[in-house]
Amino acid sequence: MSIEDRAKATGKNIEGKAQEALGNITGDPEDKAEGKAKQAESEVRHGIEDVKDNVKKKID
Image (cartoon, rainbow, N blue to C red; front, side, top):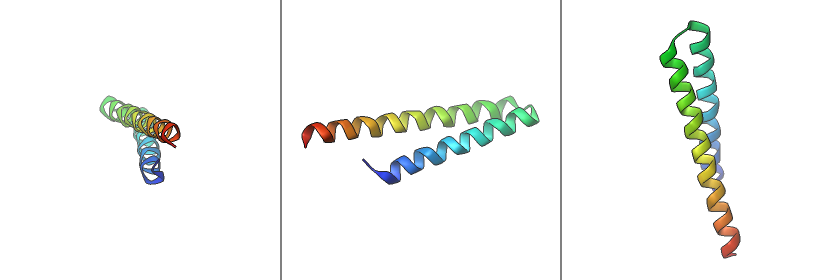
């Protein structure tokens, strides 16, 4: 597990939520879509870290 990777994923999630909120306020569908995409990327990154953690636990 990399705390740095998890922190980057959390940062990407926060960035995505902010961009989606901005898109909702301004009515810009592109900002909303990009924000949602960043949040999805964050979920994938967290999932990868979970898999790494599980593999490491099984090895140890």
